[in-house]
Length: 233
Image 1: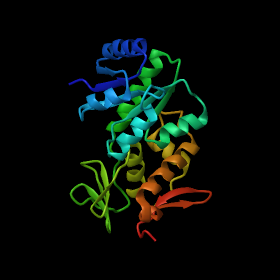
Image 2 (image 1 turned 180 degrees about the vertical axis):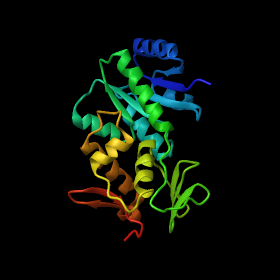
Image 3 (image 1 turned 60 degrees about the vertical axis):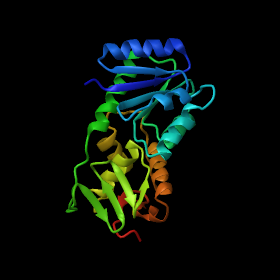
Image 4 (image 1 turned 30 degrees about the vertical axis):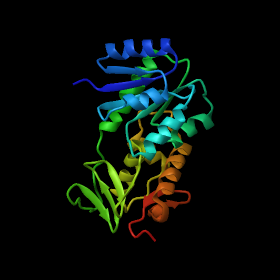
């Protein structure tokens, strides 16, 4: 069954070009002209969203933020005429997985789509003597469920994007190891040259904010990187 992609852009020509070329690559493509229309069309069967940032009504950033608050982990690639570093970091901070500046080449879009889909299929292996309990990692009242791709603190689900879940899983599966930012990029995003050291800090900051009182479980080692603090102290 082909992977299903939702293209969201208020430019009819862009939608038609992306639909034609992605369909030729074997994907099932559906288009929406606004974020509001896209939210009505989005289903769990969609594997990825190509999302324009600047649209009438709800912006792409607002749509992504809404999805992440609802704990929807569908990968999002932003399409935008804005190409400054701050714009890119805004995209990542609201839960985006990639960021493509307009005008773009179709080859670039297809390559990025394939890279994001490939990356999201990977599962992080557990290690450092931590046992899985029914395919979970459990640290006191914090639970990472590999089947549902969710993290819980007590009974509360912590809404993580797919990128954030991969990052937490990497750290939690290897709590005895300090990962440099370069290590994280190499292990999780080796095929994504747009990811920078600052991007890692943005993701970590976002995860910590969501974890609230448990934020100290993502510990930093100044000059070295990040590690998972099992004790939470």
